Length: 206
Image (cartoon, rainbow, N blue to C red; front, side, top):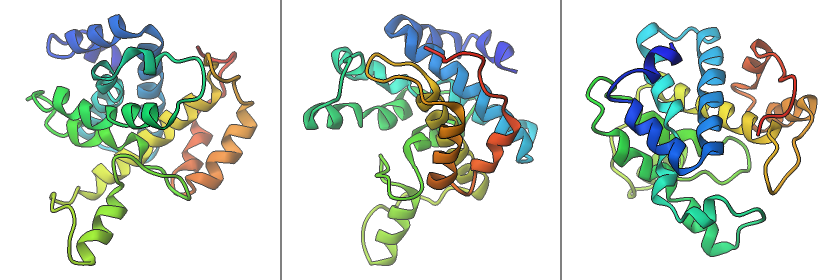
C-alpha cells in the first residue's frame, strides 16, 4: 500500500518536499506509516480507513517544512521559544493536506499525532480537552471527529512515539525496545497492546 501511495501524482510532490527539507524526518514518516498500518490492520480498520491513515501517517510531519529548519535540526534540547515554534507543525500539516481530494479525511487525522494519553501535554489541544471546554460553556466549536478517526489519531500517536523512542537522534540515544514498550504501556494503555503485532527493529533507526 505504501509503495502504491508513494507513486501517486498527488502525494509524490508532497513527499518529495518533505525529503528535500529533511531526510531524517522523511524516513521517520515512512516508518511511522508502516507501524500505523500494522496497528490499524490488527485493530480491524477497513481498507478505506487504512488508506486515509496511511496518507496521514506518511505526511504527519509535513508541517515541519513551515517551521524554522534550525529548530527542527537542533542537536539538543529546545528552549521555550523553540518549543512553541515546533508545536506549530501539526496544525501546519493541515494546510498542506486539506487539498487532497482523494483523501478527504487525512488532514483531520494527521495533526492528532501529538494527542498523547496520560500526563503528557497534547498539541494541538486534544479532543478530550476541546470536549471539556465545550461542556464548560465555551471553547472550540469544531465538529466532532468520528470514532474511527479518533482511534486512527491515537494509533498514529502510538506509531510516532514508538519510532521517536527507538530511534537514534542527534540529541538522544535510542531506548531499548522493552523499555519503550513498557513506557508506552503506561502512557498509552488503550492502544499499547497493538505493539505486540510489531517485531522489534534489528538496529536503531536514524
